Length: 221
Length: 195
Image (tube, rainbow over all chains, first blue to last red; front, side):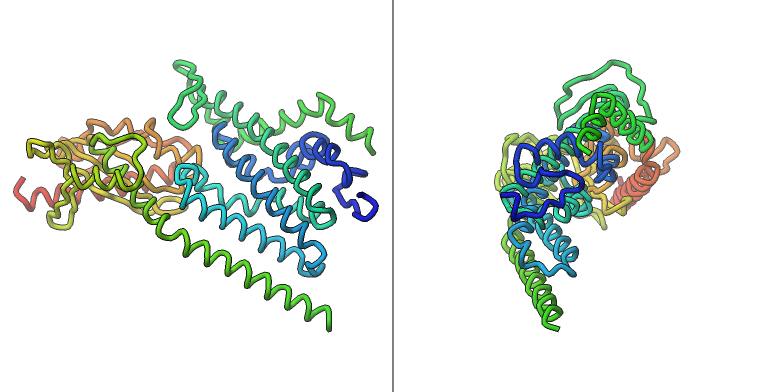
């Protein structure tokens, strides 16, 4: 494919046709958080614990894949002028459906996700992938792109969550299970609070750039 | 003109499909969702009272455990869920309480020892506070500090002292208000009954 599908992938030439490239771009080269600085509202808000970060990541992966699939299938039918409204309507419908389904059949999961479900609708990554990719590419590759971006988002969130939970509270807790506990650790309010999220994200982005993220970007352009 | 008409039709169709899907989903899951919410409340009452039940109990078993062990009595305006042992004595009594939180309603269970003054356990079964900050009220780490405390000060003032959550001043204040309110109600009902 490729010839028939326009590549409007946010400065990612050639990735429209090849799954491996689309995947690499989402997770690393064009990581939604570290490179595009998209979707950081939730990345900052819910990374107080590693568990929260992972649950949120899983929910976003699921929703972004499904909404990209449906929007890609509908891409030729959606009128251009009202496409954004259509995107929001589809994403919101999907998130609410997932929420209702979880409440009915996976109560425990729903309880943990509770406060985040609304945040998923507003996650810029989901609409970003719809606008930049799914509306211009076939369903298969759109789902790969969505999954990759979801994974890229999740792995950054997990690192920030780990740093903030371990550094802020001196423990790692999953549900009722305490995995790590540093005895007599004084609570570090900078890391558990909002400033910690900004600081951790800033250092993480700097570290990723030092590890070669930037070089790959420059080489591509 | 033709394009506008298409846009309008598309929007109407998309809106109808989305609304239809959501309505259908709501209707189809209503019974299960309500059952889950009720089971959650019952689970918290049983936990707070210290009633034993199967850990993997579904909604049905929870209701059974509740009906078998718990008797609900109303004194004045306070509804007590009493844990009645096999010998007929009351082992603990729980009162549901709630109020406004920071983002949404907070609801919880206050379980007392048979003296109806000493806290056996407090749990929160519904809350939408900020995860990691106010949301910590739902953790055992927070509720543990209430165990064994009195709902009345030595001077006779109703209320429960606790260590507020740093960074969640609003949530802590509202929890304090609702606990003081329920403590006052319990003491008034007890006084009216001559205890």
